[in-house]
Length: 388
Ligand SMILES: *[C@@H]1O[C@H](CO)[C@@H](O)[C@H](O)[C@H]1NC(C)=O
Image 1 (cartoon, protein in one colour):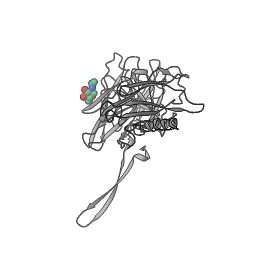
Image 2 (cartoon, protein in one colour; image 1 turned 90 degrees about the vertical axis):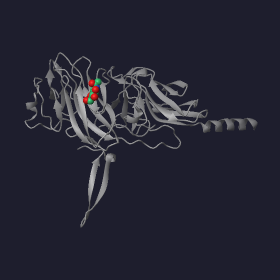
Image 3 (cartoon, rainbow, N blue to C red; image 1 turned 135 degrees about the horizontal axis):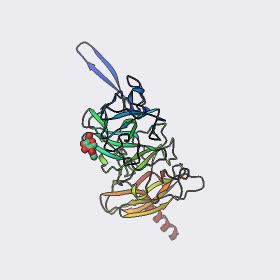
């Protein structure tokens, strides 16, 4: 079982029985690949019994998963109708046929927030989508837009646990004429999310984006965060993705990140917007500051963002100093209410200069909103100097 070190919690439980007192150590791995989440565990009869070659159908026994409808194991390099099937990681993945479903029960903590990370690829040119759900919550993830040239992407979706054991389901909503079409699913992981404390000097929650969905250490495409309007169940605590396209959650192991280990790369121009409602005091002056950079992914310039804070909006172009990978930008505003919207999108539709088709864009990080007290100090000092 793969487990993030910081996600490992050890709870010591004392049992006081009449004559014995003992304790047991219970390990909760708070972020992990699901059992056989990479679909690499061989089924009882071996992978060859699962219809490799694209001709299999009928429910198959994928270890640790329950299936309904045509769910097939696929192998990397496997050809079908002249097309090589894409397996995101390792050698195996599963493909969901028309209306097919795959599910697994998970132990969780009732009331807590969890994020599911999974990788998916399309097989046919048509629109394909996956319904990911932990009933009663569900979301349909559209696989039509390919964000990376590799032909697959990783996605995150969050839910609040309504019980101690929940069922995670993936369902192909498609009804294609060609039964060999249908999305490919791989690398399913879960992480318990923590809502970071609100810093005293910053009204933005999780402004450094350090808390978010699980990312595989060996996965270099980042995680797409699709539309999510509910700030209570967001894979990126504090933030919502209020546009119809995704933004990308990136890490410092595979991308250039201004600060810490995580940041957001804005994709898809105006169709990829992140925002947060921050607490403000009406009529007070504030300053929004943030880092604006590039992701180190050969993104074709120019890079620019539109930053919003209340009724102020500003277009900021990325123009770093010589060797810097980011710059700091700011925007002053006066709060009009006790909640103020802070939002960002990319002004341009950028693609990578190496493959000319993968989407990329400017990186934002370290977002802060604070009373612009320092502003008044500057004004005061200026006045002071003039008097002198
Ligand atoms: C997705 O699945 C859930 C649970 O299985 C279901 O309640 C929901 O209606 C489905 N959504 C769509 C669009 O079919």
